[in-house]
Length: 449
Ligand SMILES: Cc1cc2nc3c(=O)[nH]c(=O)nc-3n(C[C@H](O)[C@H](O)[C@H](O)COP(=O)(O)OP(=O)(O)OC[C@H]3O[C@@H](n4cnc5c(N)ncnc54)[C@H](O)[C@@H]3O)c2cc1C
Image (tube, rainbow, N blue to C red; front, side):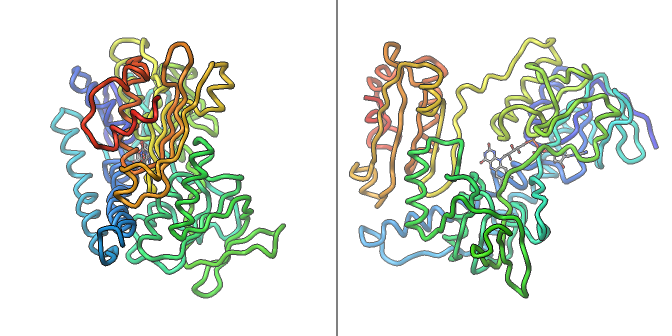
């Protein structure tokens, strides 16, 4: 048992913690970082990065299939074992590299579960860590569903590490993780079903574009069931059966059922009351500066904070903002108005800014450019049948208020629009620029007219 004193103690070593810790250490603060799992957090170890390994290989398979008969002969298949090895080689190197980075920057690293034992003191195993400032960056975990048989569900962690792809895979929940994994599982040859309670999958996204993505999924052989009621999961021999008491005739069978029904802040065992830190089901309550109103020594960032998004992008921003506020006084507020996001399906769906409905609700005088890209050369040469766009422009100012894009390359192209929106570049200015041609990004010109 030892007592330590630091300027800042950070619980978590994921992406938001990383973005907070390094600037603080560079500024000369004595920083401790603590994690109960191998260092690196969700994005690098169990989220964005390993997912993108699987998505990249699946994408190649889908791309080749779409080119069959128009330039490519023979259909490639996913080599799941090789893919897992390649992904694991990346993931396995993360903890040592991350910890080394912290230590080389002069930080002290701790391993174990952290909990508050006072407003400015944490316990980690037998150690006591007292800090001027404590940053909670503990991430999120799958939402407990409270349904009988929940223990039969596989989490996203389990899906990412599957040793082999089962024949029938069912996803409970129609968010971005389910939709991305559905395309991966289907590319690997599984029969895939996505069960969504709401009337549409991917509810926060522009409905018109989601509908086209659903067509693409169905053409790929993915079954999407909306309005699905799930309140039990039963195991019968090797099979899992998912159903609902109210609708005994609607039951779905699978070999693997994946929990894709949302994630909640991971605040388990932090003893926040002892730390005088208020939390809601959405996470640790913070003010605009990411500081706890009930314990001014505490900041919360990333998925653990009750801020609007659970994304690596916003976690990074919050980490950087918290560091600046700790160093400079509470002067900085995260600005997420222009937040480009992507769903890595095939084709990918990308989005930035307001949906059409939100723009109208907010009272903007808008014109909306919408269309399908099927006949465009960029679609024809790759056999893409499900490209679509909705771009919302403001009359008078010609500002881009939102863009919702479905198509190959749009996950990258959306960043150009986000930059234009941030810098106040108008649609006409953007259209008048010079673009490397013909590229997917140069297609944006045709969406801005
Ligand atoms: C499958 C999947 C795919 C995703 N894909 C994307 C994507 O494409 N793009 C994107 O922007 N976002 C994506 N995300 C979301 C993104 O991964 C998270 O938003 C981000 O990683 C959150 O970072 P964080 O720093 O808040 O927490 P995390 O990275 O989750 O780190 C929290 C850390 O805290 C540790 N910890 C928790 N409690 C304690 C405790 N009491 N004591 C000690 N340590 C503790 C944990 O072990 C963990 O290492 C994805 C998430 C998942 C699950």
